[in-house]
Image 1 (cartoon, one colour):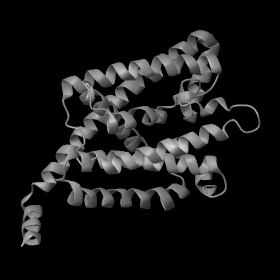
Image 2: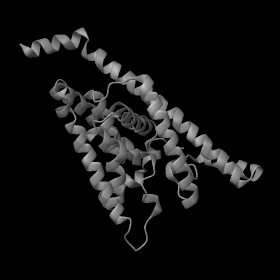
Image 3: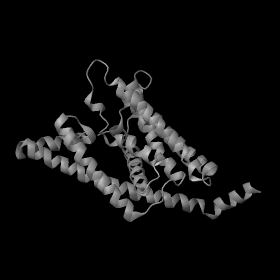
Amino acid sequence: MQLWEPQHVRTFLPSLVVMIILGVVLRIWLGKKPEKIRMIPLQICTVFLLVIEVIKQVKSFEGGQYDLYSLPLHFCSLFLYMLPLMCFYHGKYKQQVRAIATTVSGSLFILIVIYPSLIYSGASIDNFFNGFFSFHTVAFHTVATFTFVIIVALNLHTPDFKKDAKAVLFFMIGYCVVAGIVAQVLKTNYNNFYHCNIPPLQKLKEAIEPVLGYGFAQCLYVIIVSIADLAFTHGAYQFYRLMRNVVTKIENSKFVKRISARNEK
């Protein structure tokens, strides 16, 4: 189980550094602006993700048969639903919508930093300029990762644990039910609900199937993946709260305040 491939070290690691630098620049430049202005970088990223996803869906029909794996039911497909809502929805459930979008972004950020090979392969990086689907895979997940940096850097969501935790929990339960069932019906691996992309766990799954029977083992597997998703997204939300507090503490530190005071002079 290789967490990082050489291609990730050469490309994603530098891009992660650039993301953090851009986040600092954005906070300095736009941090004290009205929310309408602070939301613009996230809106730009969201529009980009939507555009390349539309192109992907069109291309998935090439050859006369739609590729079922392209259906937007993967965990990272949640960006396509939640980011537009976060950017443009200002109704009664604004707090909950932003909590979900932020948690989804934080989840991808954590996962891609720890295990980028699970998100996209080194082969996708090698073929970045050779095929649209490889370009889409790398570009989509890189920009989606950057959205978390933007949200934290520009304070685009104010945590409210009671409201946020409930919203994220119910949203993720709904997602797991829909994606888990559709994965079995279409026999397509959305969010690892059909089989596991982590080799040791897939071998374990295959080992217990003859003992429990395929149907029961598969049902148990989907439940375990769902529980893991719920636990992981809760952890991602707590990670987001931690990052937000860290950024605030750094900004309020005496060292940073001295630098700011000198610049103002």
